[in-house]
Length: 342
Image (cartoon, rainbow, N blue to C red):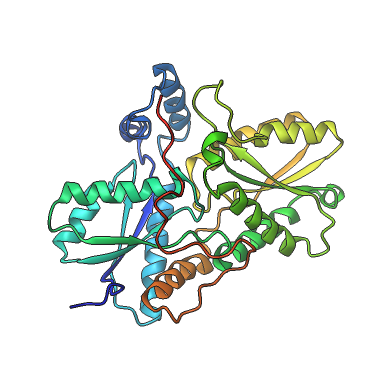
């Protein structure tokens, strides 16, 4: 009988995105299932995807990451298949868990494409995996998840390098006064109050800022993007575009934005940062650069394998750079509770 940390597959789990116009509608229906979303809002968001040919970059990036993780596992002498599944778009988790079963996989370790603790970025993925296993039935594999890892060097190092490269693209006369903005997906404030999401993002942003600006003279802050839902519900602020405009009013003439909260390139980065925030910066006379996401950095794939190895062997160092302490392998029953549904 195998040890409880003997895994015979690694499963990469992501939010997912459409890969063509025909997938946009079903994707948005899955994203909004169980929520009261006005039909007009869905039409508006669908039109955004249509401007990009109905394609989100996330699936292509996840395929590349799966290939890089497979290579890294082999380089470290792990003979292990890598699977990939999504919450909201093919390959859907239920289908992928069925593929695990059909391949004879009994125990898999899942890495989720967000290192931060909140209901939507952590616990909900656990619920998705449990639902997928229930749909597959009695022969479904046992699936564990890696710990939240916001301060892993495989995230912080690449994010710092990408942001430094972005800063170098600013006009030289504005570079010295540029502010660093670390963007992440906003949450309702009531939900953010029940988890470590904001503290972890600020810790990660501090770690990146210290590497980009060792002297500590450059201003930095965490900003938020991609809010949705009722305008009457308070969400984390400031919005990245609002903050760029208020900085312009204060005399700031350049910003460098890191999508630190979204480590895999996705549609919300493309729309909310590359289109909307960049447009508002231009209107305000502010030079704008956006650092690429870090998912295609070899250190990021190496991080995924680090997290696998630390779970495989308790004597392996759990890499951590920040000041908040390590998160447990298994989430406590009361952490990141689900939002109350009205």
